[in-house]
Image (tube, rainbow, N blue to C red; front, side, top):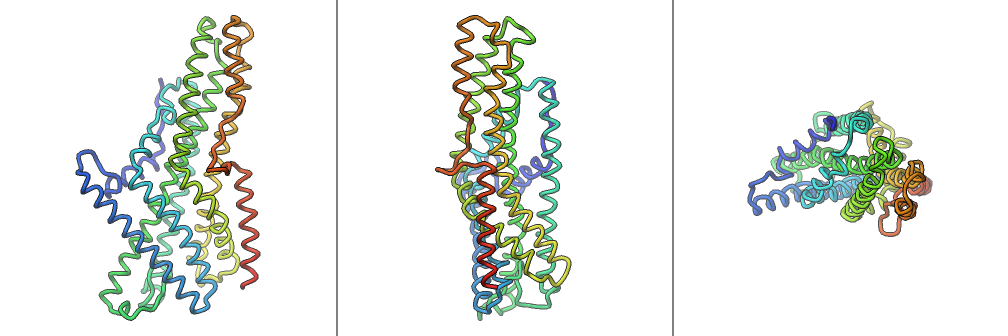
Length: 378
């Protein structure tokens, strides 16, 4: 068994979750853990409330550009709020899937380890670029929406401006400002929840690919163990199939929300890039980062789900590329039966909606239609 490389960005994110207390360490009391969860949730929920109040104020003022920009942030933050809920209350399930044997590829030999490490390096590069871009966008947003930069002592982070009498009290203003500042910062952190989701889905698809490779190589190294290796492959496929189904059922609500708001998210991102006239270069960077986030948030979810389907669909071909024809009649029957089972690929679905690239194109088309409608109000 060879050494398998872990994504350093994902590892640091998990360490950060433990460090700030979102994920509790062993030995902490249940009451303290539940209190921390409620505090984290309420703190971020208050930021979502600020966004809605700011959007309402922009609507009253007739500021279409500001309204669309805040609407985009509202959509993103509602989804992020759901991700935070998963982080806080579904930690055990997430870590179970994250360290599942089917995800860690613990049975990989030297050749398979080379394949896994090669793919992991590509994912690690993307995760590093993705997290850097998100944090750069969040940093720019906090800087250019600060009172020092805007010369507006009534402005909150993310260009939130609303009129409340009590809000003009300087002490209260700075309390609200710090709360919104933390909400903006943690919004970027909570979006990295998708790193865990993508990593698990990526490894499930990769495990299907490795399982297909093992089926192709059945009986090549030790011809007398073909039947025994076939039984191990059948067990491995059954465990992998059940693990993916448990994963899908655990996160189906999050996937549904992602798919449901995906079109609106992409639409508002394109509108901001197209029609919002930026006052400086920093705002262009923010709009570009928001668009990339909207795009990859939906695309990678559909892409990895599609990869699971494609790689599981190849398994029947891999099985019949092995030396099954040289085996005994009883073994041939097992091969044929197993081939019929794996002939139907595993498709990740959210209720009745399949998760694949075709669904992503449907979301993109819907976003284009919404964009045309939004143009008419300009």
